[in-house]
Length: 255
Image (cartoon, rainbow, N blue to C red; front, side, top):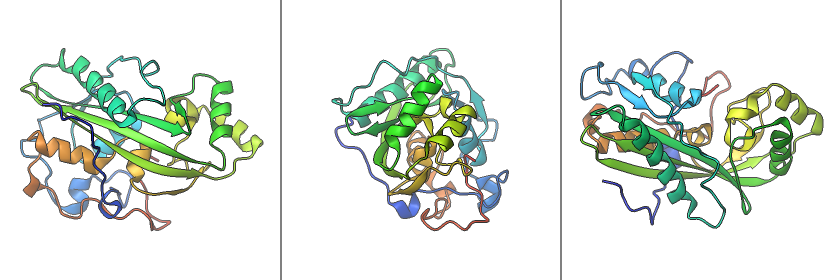
């Protein structure tokens, strides 16, 4: 059943970051804990074409079937909306569109937006738009909101959303031009990736790192637990770590 989203749940920053010591090791092997209530043949359908969401989930040990929803993300947002609810609605719309053709499966949808003042920034569609977004974000704070939705095999749906305040450093025109020329901005809300270390646009964030990457894992695991794909006793207590003090040698999901 779809929860009313009059209140969005905040997650403790100390438990809101999932990291891997090496890029290709799964959380299952990293923590020595099997995450799944069913056999590994239980595949989670990801209703998103985002490679970062797929990396986060597969890195956590999930078997995925990636089926992009085809839902138009551009037309649904304005700054006067209840934006957490709007992201949950769009995430659920994506999950429903895929669930309609993949019956009796677990389906996960997600949507991420960047909110700068009274503007909602989606994915730039041109070099001009990407450049304008990055110049607008330069040396300012903004908010990243991700809505997540899960539909279980019985058709029941659950949603949640997570918000993170992000600060972007001052960006020089030449480095913006170089980043845009790399084509990295085009599949990212706001036109940047927090995980892009060569560009390194973010100086600080107040909550969940993976929310800014595109999928807040603690919130996602909670929804999957409520949907009975995961059992609480199968989850290690320290599956997420504080994310403020990463060592330089550690590799972060999404890079």
